[in-house]
Image (cartoon, rainbow, N blue to C red; front, side):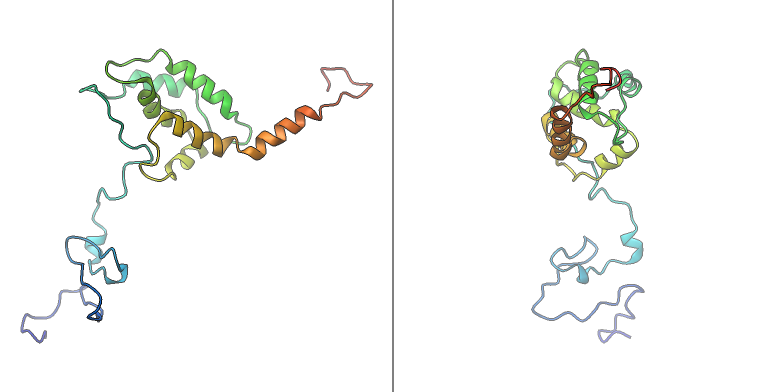
Amino acid sequence: MNPNNQGPPPLGRIPPPIPPSIPQNHGPSGPNLHNPALDLRTIEELCQPTMNGRGGPIAPVNIQATDFGLKNHMIQQVQNSCQFYGLPSDDANKHLDKFLTITQNMKQNGVINDALRLYLFPYSLTHHATTWFDCLLNNSIHTFEEMVSKFLSKYLPPSMVTKLRNDISNFRQLPDESLFET
């Protein structure tokens, strides 16, 4: 029994002893953000679906159109024309060139090209590249230029650029090789 004659505490809610110097900012409204050890939510409450931490890496963009939504034909065109897998043999620059070529004629009233490309770009990714995209911090990308920068830093890092530059500058054709063989 509880000393205040309120009955036993509910199962799963037996609080740990709390030193008086720590504020008790917890309860049904959410976790104690200052001290997660003081989070007194039940397992049932912890398992409830929430929107916290959802939304993906693309931050909301201010769009003037009142009825903006990606059209299915735009998504399908991107998915059917250029897919980037994230494999070592994939060419990130070639993928970007193809993506820009495909999206240059896609227009929607009140939507700037940058926003349209930003929202379409994830549909051009698949397999390993989708996993990479999903691991980016929520709301960390605000422009298509930021997306391109993160994409290229992952799939065309400076070490790869240096290697390619060295391969080109160290190119040698042996005396008994044709140019085709080289």
